[in-house]
Image 1 (cartoon, one colour):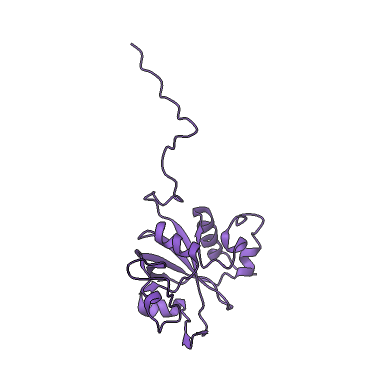
Image 2: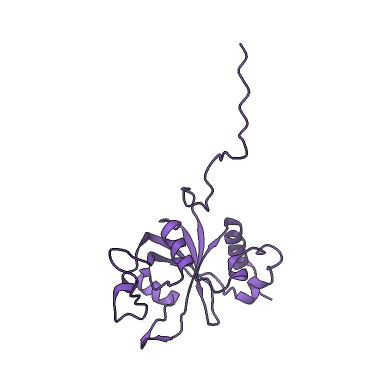
Length: 189
């Protein structure tokens, strides 16, 4: 008796979960934005730079008050994922970090004295989440937003940073990740 050929999967069947559905064990890549220069919110300085993280080594990534960005951290980020630490609103955006602890409630939302206090978020029903990040290294050279925009119609065509620049936590594809790290090795002319 002959063995039957393998059955073809139908269009509705998935062979494996994709890295974007939050169910995969594959490493994912991110871009996380913070402001490295002093900015006061409710009388408190909310600056946070890669150099601040380097001194601390590990830090909570708190204060994210965009529902989409918080949801990405809560539902998709996993320990071991990698991220670019992007300095926004300044002249030096680059750098690399690692997700050290998966999402947990952002307790700064419950602190009435914290600049990102949110009366609608409670310990029983948290509205906002954060992850812990760990410093890995600085990139070997500065890669500017201007430089990345040169690839807006090519290799980085669908990169969130170039399409939705205000979102503070963004997914980066493995191709985009590798491409940007490849830029690190190129000489700037």
